[in-house]
Image 1 (cartoon, rainbow, N blue to C red):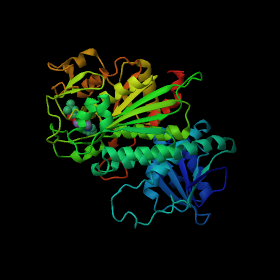
Image 2: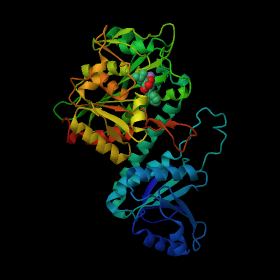
Image 3: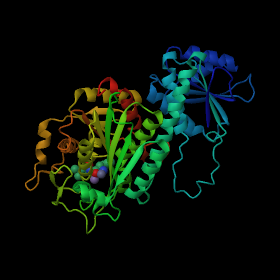
Image 4: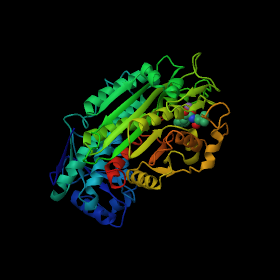
Length: 500
Ligand code: BES
Ligand code: MN
Ligand code: ZN
């Protein structure tokens, strides 16, 4: 699709986003007048509620459709993206080859940011789930969205340059998000650790960041006993992906951001096996890895002036004769020994090795891990936010603010010392599960802290409730790409507070 900025020239289908504010009625009056329809009826029937869509056929201009799109009361980035995404998803089959969006009525200072949200929403709404449906090829592809189609953004001439940049950003984010949706929605038998590594190597080449893989033999050599332990029950061996973008800072200062993402390609629970109801959702247990991969795709494309490094542990958690058993002791990469009291608390084991590996290898100004780590965070705060665990107040504040602004909300959780006391083991340095059914997302974070304690700016994000959820694309749950925008937008402003 070609996306252009224009100042007039209205195509045959024009989308007009409208905020539910005091000016709505005056705006509708003008629209009604121009289209030659009754103003008072329009004012009665269209309230600009969030995602409300109203189609007008202009009486005075043949073959023109006007789509009024409600944004609700507060039109920030997340609201605008959601409204446009819902619109393009619903109308994609009906839209003509050329569609325009009239942004001229939005507050001028917000137009570049909101045009990014609008374009990103339009592109994401075209996403097709159903990777393995045999009629996928046969379905008539909507003409809007094809390479011949065009999206025009109508803005005042003085805003054309900044909106042009916003369009590019939207395209980069949309491409990465779609790749992450696919990775999350792919079934477990098509995304074994080796297949995920191959995918990331290909993405690295295309997006120009570097990627290397430590296979099982390499992991044995460096002593990654926790990651190896989790993977040992599977015929598909574990691996560690190491990603890098941007030169090491020398004289010219560049902040360094370190990322770790949980990449459990399927989590059966292992010998501490999960109940079978809804176990299929555990193909989503690489949501942290997916967010990190997506962030690399975007940051490398946008050429952000930072250095970005990541360690992504990949493993399949299976019950098997060779699998780890409750009570087994693993020797982690850090040297600390861990008693595995529950094989279903596998995420923290593989994260422990990846975190200490990254800390060992690189001096990061900020270190963030993301993981679909606990059901407990879903019980605590649901699907509206991810749990944020850190002892660095400034980092908490910055991450929360970036998240709120882009619609990937974070909510801070306590990290008091007492929460860690139940992790003592009688046979090893620590155990991976307290044995108590309470505050499990917090004790998981306290477990990770044992492997990051020396890092002054570390945050752990428990994205179990946000990485995979309800959407317009699917009847059940599907990948959300939660974390990609959060990480990129944090990276864009991190030099103001960290490193450099
Ligand atoms: N991958 C799960 C957490 C999860 C649950 C993610 C639901 C998404 C949706 C994780 O490995 C797990 O099994 N956690 C256990 C921890 C427990 C054994 C301490 C849990 O949350 O029950
Ligand atoms: Mn588990
Ligand atoms: Zn898991």
